[in-house]
Amino acid sequence: MKGVYHIQNVNNYHSLYKRWLSRFAGVASKYMDNYLAWFKFLQENKELSRQALIRLMFVAACTPSTFETETSLRQARFAA
Image (cartoon, rainbow, N blue to C red; front, side, top):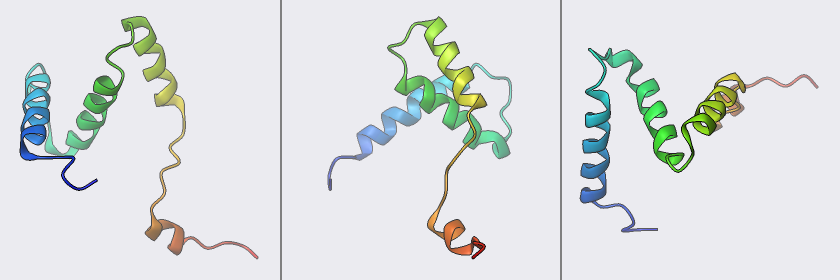
């Protein structure tokens, strides 16, 4: 997978993200990861109709996150 991403891809994504963020009046940096996740969700599903997109976003928001990292799994204590 080496060479798949290059600086032009990064610059393009950053440009699209900045343009999308410009519609909001002031974005707190502590919420930037949430805005990025929202933007990524919209980019990955841009072929859907507006109604289907809203439905999918609602379902995704109501679904509990199952994201685990290696560190969190190592630190978990399992009852024997």
